[in-house]
Image 1 (cartoon, helix red, strand yellow):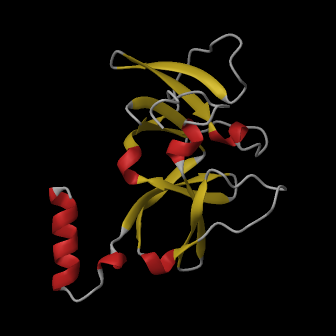
Image 2 (image 1 turned 30 degrees about the vertical axis):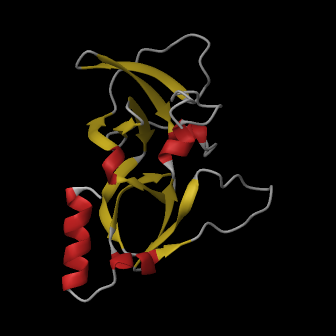
Length: 171
């Protein structure tokens, strides 16, 4: 167990709460009218939408690449990836720079909301839709007050064979 996990477990035990109540922190963002969340530990930084160099013959959802302090970073437009209509870029559009399995990449979203902590009572399993809707990349649903968040498994999404952004040997 890491030092951080030990301190979290110790503090949960000393407060009388069971260890299962450990909070999960998520960065929330908007795509269209829906709110999504990704594990905050995967987020490296948040940047404004800027000039992106397009790469020939890349899938439509891969907008291109940017040079981030000497690292070439692929940029994925999540609205196009999830087939949520045409992406419109405005002053609220941001790129979330992620570090997933040692690989740096960016995702374009309509806007970042905030960082929220969810305990186990606020997490719900992914509903079953059969083969109608692909829920493979959804960890579950989070509820905060009246808000419903779609929690993404960003490692599974970026490691999928369709995306091809993470070496399959890593997974």
